[in-house]
Image (cartoon, rainbow, N blue to C red; front, side, top):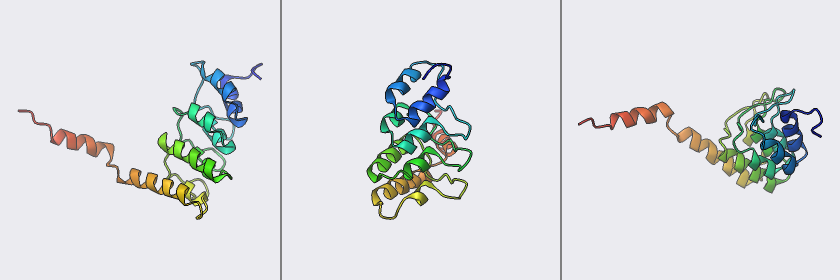
Length: 155
């Protein structure tokens, strides 16, 4: 597998094949790019979510979960929400939200991840709605810094 393949190619292949052992071996090299993309812009997180690999998702927890691929404009969260097995889809979405995935991101069809989820999957829909609410309710970082400055007493 590694004959002539770059670390980026090995990372993507490991995620496509749900092969945590191969992924672990390539991640041990500090030169490996966690956000490596293929020709259509998919990252390891996209492939791990597409094939339902919780192990690979966990191993890529420091990768950027908000990268959109070039064809559909999907994020890994879109892929997770499209996964056919509901319990696995929920677990993957839960991890991606924990890693900072933005559930408000729209793909090229104008769909947010929640738009890909059946109304019958209440647990997953609730997770995405709560994540959206948390982001929308959080004050902008500049507001936090300004309010801290206002409370500073220089006496």
